[in-house]
Each structure stands twice: as structure tokens, then as C-alpha cells.
Length: 157
Image (cartoon, rainbow, N blue to C red; front, side, top):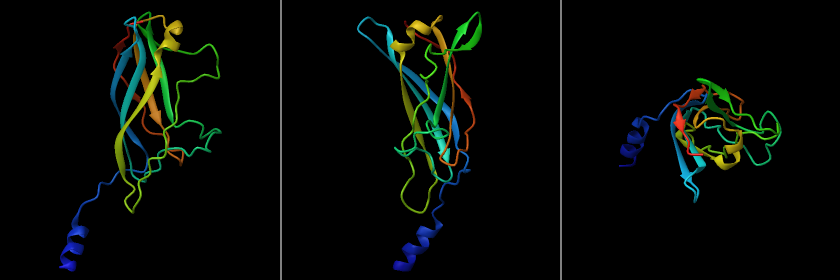
């Protein structure tokens, strides 16, 4: 009976993904403040990675590993997408994904990542109610994923 289970486990097909992360845009949702204005945004992407090396350790705080989720916040101005740039150049919309590496032999991973934007801080920078995002991620080997663009979204500001 042990041989049967061992043989069966050997026939289970494991997902195989490239070692370069691959992402797709998932969704964007907002939460409103007491005045009915969008104050928090949740941007979700889906990802796959063949060697599971997505995520930064807490001590990875210096470039090129300071961030691994790169978000370009865009707005429509004069019918063109223009990047929203904070006045202070040390502020960024980039973020950090924690370690996602699974235990075990199979390191192939897939899932969703949601990052939150504090939109109330961006309100003074916005000249438009219409926004979009360009996103990519990097793994610990510094492989960059593909870049995804979101559709346009209307904000209540």
C-alpha cells in the first residue's frame, strides 16, 4: 500500500512557472472618508514565480532592494496620462512585499498581492479625477516582472 501512495504522489503534476515574475492587473477599489471622498485605495495584482523568491527580508532596506513593488500613479491631464509626483522627492508610491517563499521542495508560487494607497495624501497633487497605475515587481534576484497598466478609474476627491 505504501508503494501505491508513493507512485500516486509522483504522478501529481506540479505547476511550473518561469523564474522571472509575471503579473497581471487585478483590481482597484477605494474606501471613502466621512465626507464621501475616496481616502484609501487598494490596488491588487496577480502573480506567478517559478522559484518563489518574491519578497524582501526586513533587513533589505538599501537600493536595489529597498522596494520590490513599483507603482507609478498616473492622472489624466489634457487627455494625456501624466505621472503624479510628490513634492518631496523622497516620498514614493513604491512599496515592499514581504517574503512569500513557500516551504518545501516546490517553490512555484502564484497568488494576489494588494497594496494600499493613502489617497487623502495625494489629493493636493491631483489635477484630475481620472487616474491609472503602471505596476511591476522585482524578485530577490532582481528580476523585473512585466509592466502592467490598469484601466482608468474615477476618484471622488
